[in-house]
Length: 239
Image (cartoon, rainbow, N blue to C red; front, top):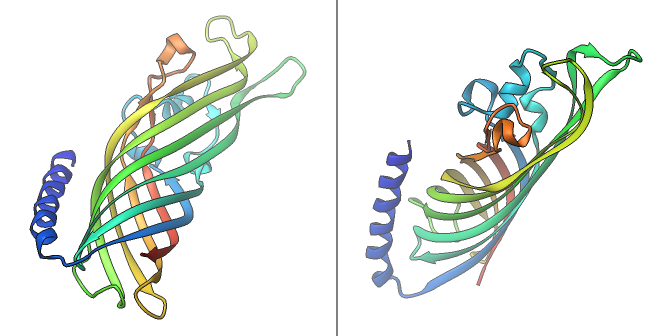
């Protein structure tokens, strides 16, 4: 998958280089979007994912991968060369905290043993978009490829059960870092009375996994899958 995306990016970059000299004008735009992030599901997550381990451990925790669905915002600065190719860079923000309990265990008072699992992702993304049909004052579908640096923070806090003697203890575990991975996008731009303003609908899928530190840092496994799909509604202004 990564090789295919790399080859596609190279092809689009060559097309960009050919298109730039023929363009009489370089047009810039700012794109702001808001929408939702859906994480990669249980069966598609990277091997060694800590959330999968939490769900399938000897003492499994009760939550769903789908509970990590949440809103996301993004802002981008793009430069168009001609009517059909543009490059851009932007940043997004996603954060979600999910409650969890042990499936089969309670404490000495008959109460559930509770945790909170938190995930934050701040993707910084470079994209090449190809808009094969139409011009700025017309509806323009597009596809694109790129790469993201995914700054992440993953936490587990609350009460936990020791796997050796079944004692209950309070703790907070934190993993931070930056992961890198490819991105694919597809969408459509719809102009608003001319070629300056447009509304957008975009679907974007990001790939990547971060390192948690595993057992040494208190986690059941050493990776956290950061992949998922963004669906974003946005507003674009050209200048």
